[in-house]
Image 1 (cartoon, rainbow, N blue to C red):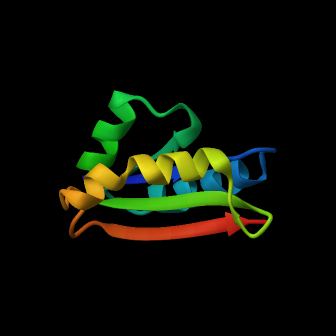
Image 2: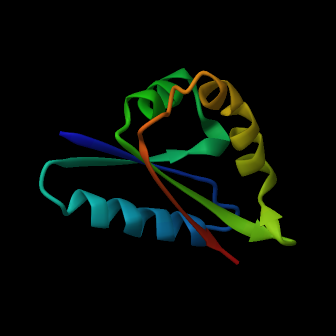
Length: 98
């Protein structure tokens, strides 16, 4: 089964609604386990899920021309995975809401 993680932050609920739609679309494909991951409350299990994922879709609201602060904290924390090539060969996508 293909694992797709939709890693997102939503300040007012709009980005969460988009994340849910992305998850539903991915889950509607045969053989796909699609899960939401709110990066504002990511824990070790969330990081482990990201490591196991075949695809990661990133979502964040746009505040003043950039991503929200909680999403930026998550992105900065992912530097170790990037540096060690832990997410190499994963399919990636992204969306934003402003």
